[in-house]
Length: 53
Image (cartoon, rainbow, N blue to C red; front, side, top):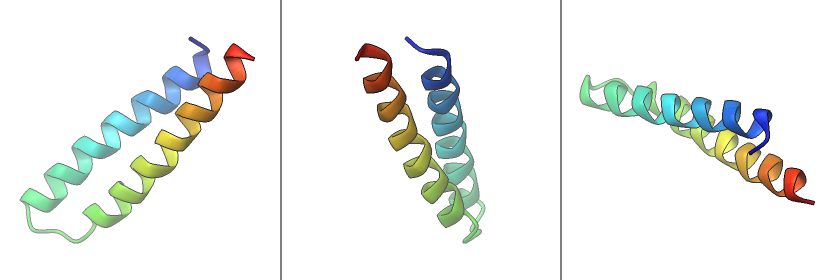
């Protein structure tokens, strides 16, 4: 697995955790974390496909 894909996956997992914590605390800032999770998820798939090609 390419290193950039691992970094993007780590960011995705951490941003999902931050979104859960934000929503549990009642903060609407969790929406930003969800958007970041989506972006990093797409980056993970991109780097995985690019690494296999």
